[in-house]
Length: 188
Image 1 (tube, rainbow, N blue to C red):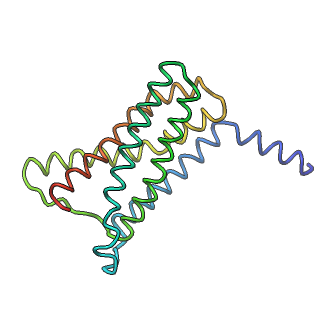
Image 2: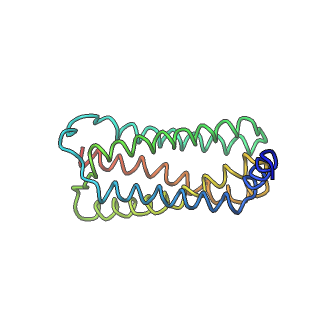
Image 3: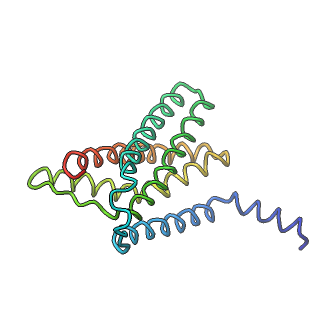
């Protein structure tokens, strides 16, 4: 097999859904494992206490912008404006990606924030937080898979999985803002 044949076979393999979706699941699993370690195994240095305190608000802003971009993207696809839909969804993906970087930096520097509220408000907060965390773990591979199908022109599969991905991604984005609002009211 010469070099050209190797490249062609690699390109063909790259567009087969099963290996790519499998790689997405593995990468997502590694990312989630890292985030869990960051939240529960890593201890933030006291040197950063009081520094970069804008990060939680930035995270909430990015989540809110992602939610808006998702809704605008839905509007555009419902009105058959595919280019505007694509732009909106790429923007939502960009907001989510920058959020993830900011989230990692915030937790690496400051660690986890404990919710100080008590009683029913604590129960409500923990319920929202639990659903947010669980669905964010589910959303990551779904978003990546949805993008893969779109970017490779598999629009039937894209539409099928997007019907599941969209509400989960939107919920995670909105509840990210809600979690920040709870922490802002009670902890920050």
